[in-house]
Amino acid sequence: MNRRGNLITRLIGSVADLIGVEPRAAVARPATPAAWSPAAALAAERPPSSLSAFALSTRPPSGRRASDSVSFDVACRTCAGAHFRVFAFPLIAPDPSPYYGLEPGDTFNRPPHRLACEGCGEIHTLFDIRTDGYDGVLNGGGATESGDSGEAPIVGASAVTITLIYNIELDELQEYASEEGRHPSDLFDAFVLYALPLDGSPPLELVYECA
Ligand SMILES: [Zn+2]
Image (cartoon, rainbow, N blue to C red):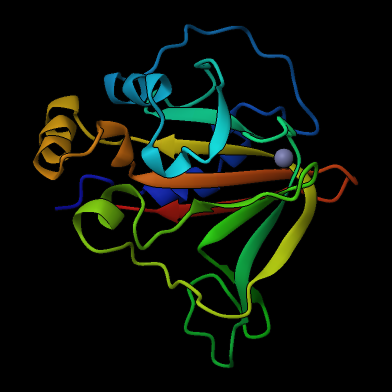
């Protein structure tokens, strides 16, 4: 069953649009009606349990975004700080590279991803594709390779926004969640991590298909 279509292609083309940040050369656009899909609205009300280590501020729905997505700005539960270093398990792609979109020598910033608060030093997991999202909960993990050694910060102090996609009918989502004893918001189809460094470096955009 391929109900997700070209989800990743769509996401990678428009991460900035997806989370509602203005592109660098933003052109004023007329306001358009904004609404969440029923599944995205559920997640806006109650974010996934995997994010419970963080304080989340829900971004309002935006007509510029897909209605099946919901975005959250991330803050620290301990000190309320809003800047984090982002960790990953970097791997240099070998030659030939077995990874789609990565040339030999490119760095593959493998999940899971932890965030370290710049204010107080608390570190918590933000995303683990082995246990989070639709495939993580229902199918034993997503397709993307995870790392288990060599964890390192991949970007310095940054404002972090995450976006979750629910490309599924509400009835179906609730049925699967109920069978697993989970909340529907836990079964997101895609996870986007967007980190905007304070020092003006280019933003980090990581997109994961989770279904
Ligand atoms: Zn903190």
